[in-house]
Length: 167
Ligand SMILES: [Zn+2]
Ligand SMILES: [Zn+2]
Image 1 (spheres, protein in one colour):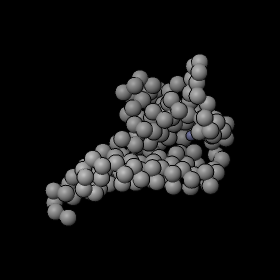
Image 2 (cartoon, helix red, strand yellow):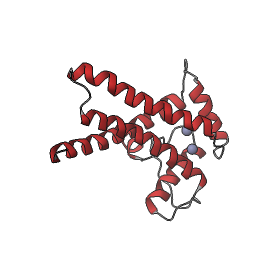
Image 3 (cartoon, rainbow, N blue to C red):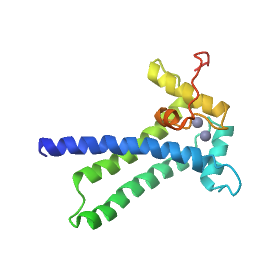
Image 4 (cartoon, rainbow, N blue to C red):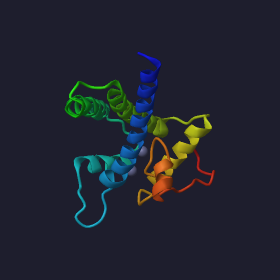
């Protein structure tokens, strides 16, 4: 691969990952915590309520199903949509974007598990862990980002920790 295409695939991978972090925020805020009249209770939101009740429970078959489903969705979509748009196969950056998005999901899943099961000496890990544990204490409307806290800051749902929470 020439340098230009390596750079464009790298940018596409990072773009796919950033798009995942927004997907994660939107899904967590509006799909997993549906609110108001006419709220749509789904299997996913019921499962998420269980997670809030039992945050240490790890249902491996469900986790594996999630990875298979999201990777299939990402790679399946790009292999169907890209040839229609380009009329000429799947360009490497489009594949890079899809892989970055699906990798974002896998990183989120593993990071979320770690957040509940392991402490960390790394400051950024401790910060993002506190961020999520505050969401667990107050699922009524704050800290929906699990991988990053950017979107909570953008959409006004960020609650900072006071440094006193045990992590
Ligand atoms: Zn959690
Ligand atoms: Zn939640």
